[in-house]
Every structure is written in structure tokens, then in C-alpha cells.
Image (cartoon, rainbow, N blue to C red):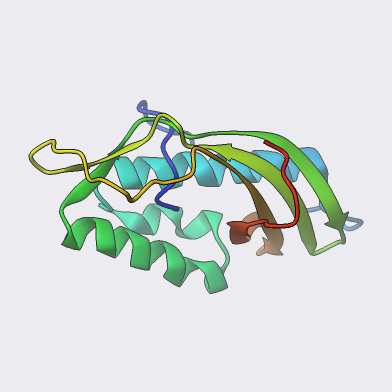
Length: 158
């Protein structure tokens, strides 16, 4: 759950059953679906001020889980929540193997705001409206989950 997230306001479905792994390689469409599931849940947790962060645990790797819990803890401790929805586009596979897929994407956070419990806008937290990100998705217990998401500085898809 990046501070750059924000998505569905309606209840979200459980992670897609189709975001599972075959014996050969991670399918790009399944990886993109898994990323979308992750982003929607990260956004929902951020919109709810970091509440019930454990809902994201099945959508991220054990290595990435602490990152998500730390971000949710910061939201809760500072009594802030996210308003708005993030959007991604241009999901482009860089490389894929049976247990890992790396991709670039454009993450648009132009309509996000971070608000205090009183509804006041927190300034300077969400800075870049569009940025190219690199994501790594891995297999975990037969499912595709997010392992890493970071800005990509070598180019732009946005």
C-alpha cells in the first residue's frame, strides 16, 4: 500500500482465483490481475486509515508484508486516510520465469489526497502525479503476489 494508492470504494472481491500459477511461467494477464487486486486492497486499507491491514497479507509476499504493515501503521498513528483513486496503465512485462515476473507500469496518483481525521489536506506527501514503477510479482503457495514495487528512474511509460 503505497501512499500513492487509492481505488475502489465498494467492497472488493477476494483475490482472483485465476491469478494462480501454472508449471511453466507466470502468465502476464494473471500477473496484471494480481497487481490490480493488490492495488485495490492497498487503496482500500489506505482509505480506511490503515485499518485491518492484514487483509492485504494474501496479496503480497512475506518479504513485502512488513512494508505494507509499516505504511498502514503510519496512517493509523498519524490519523490520516487517503481520498481518491489511483490508476495504473501500460503494464509491460520486462521478464518472466516460472516463479517471478517483473513489469513496468505507469501509476497515476493525480486525484489522490491525504486527509487528517478532521478532513484537512496533508500537504507535500503525494508529490508525483504520474510515475513509472517497476513491480516484481512472485509465486507464493500457488498464487501470484506482489513482492516489490519501486519507482523506475531509467525511463518513463507515463
